Picture 1: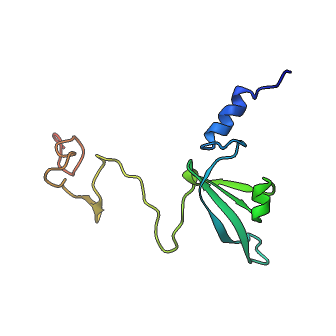
Picture 2: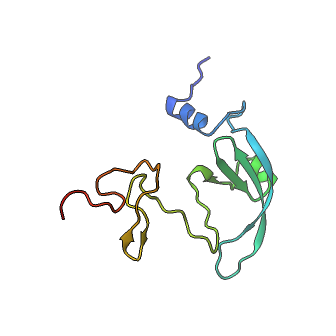
Length: 131
């Protein structure tokens, strides 16, 4: 009797989703019900969803536990590629490790003692050479 083995790409896609159970489904590290607000702008309402979180950061949600069991009507979200916006708080800005210091009234401050950037040409507001 001949059986078809899954291709390498199929195996890799299952392995990339986390630890795999015998049936090929990732084993969740957390699972529960969650109230999710619908994205419909006319009628925003809260709907109960069955949610699972796998060890590789994938969040799956289904309308019911039966849909989860039968692997139907589910959606997934990669939490490793997700950011959270907190109302009233500005997002962090990227700054260079040895860039110019923050300016006060358009003037650059001298570097703090012990700073790694001290003595770096053009950094810290100390003139380097004749003007």
